[in-house]
Length: 353
Ligand code: PEP
Ligand code: MN
Image 1 (cartoon, rainbow, N blue to C red):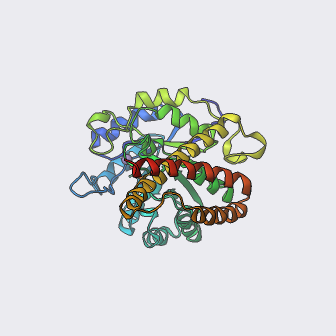
Image 2 (image 1 turned 45 degrees about the vertical axis):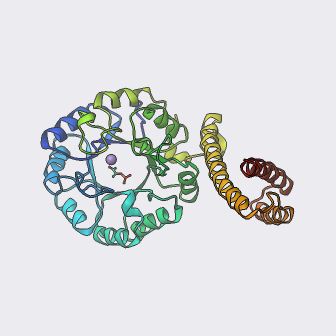
Image 3 (image 1 turned 90 degrees about the vertical axis):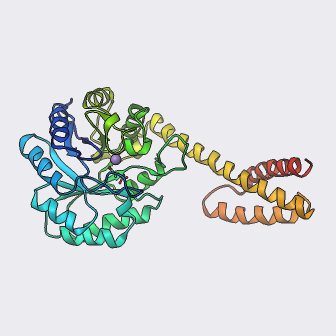
């Protein structure tokens, strides 16, 4: 590891499960020089009830011990005032606000109020839905409460089941955040983006290439037996290999911004383009499924497939929007004609069956 290593690397289990699990994981993680924070969820926000909801307050003692016995700083998730108060009581170094809490301005405000006057580091995950304002709102509430050390965590946005991601990276959103708040460190949580171990190395590299300021990676001594997120956690040994195999940007990214104008690598830009193209495909697929439903209605009501006047109206509207977005009118007209043509072909097929 380089001496000027400036990435913020956080590792530890999704959930604290037992004292043994916590201490043994922390001791193994401590040996990995790049890691500076130990994470463990104590109060787990589970999507459905009747799942493991965390050990709660009793895990604070374990986390405190790790803070005292290792060089690692400690962090856990807080969702309400009582969590914050308990973390302050047990001297937890940093608190993170989870994706399901960032969506609620009331909850974030409550957390911000209870942190007033403290010097804690606060990490804010993006909200589950792709809403940059909501993310920024949470960061602003903490800033207004006088919190000086704020870090954003990009963990992706709810993705449709069955796809490549549990939570879609939608890189343009955190990059927009970096543009708006150039001094704010933003780290990535590839574990929650993927929802599985496979591909973790590649996605971590992708986020380093995009200039993010660090990583949060879920690490468990025996991932298969983990009580939450068992598919996505890796062992401390695998974490060590992953971190050692990464190439980090040579200049500390916090000084240069996530995507600096003067030093944007081709690789980083390609990493941005690919998911955008995937999104385009997904949108085209959604559009086509609506088109098919329309075809069945047209068939039942014996309507014509092609209605020139409607197509012209739609193109005109799109041209106006395109111009507002700085896109060429002609380009959008041509593109739309291709999309529309394919819709007409598909509808004709359905109607003629
Ligand atoms: C977690 O970090 O374990 C967690 C619950 O994450 P998120 O809020 O991103 O879902
Ligand atoms: Mn988790």
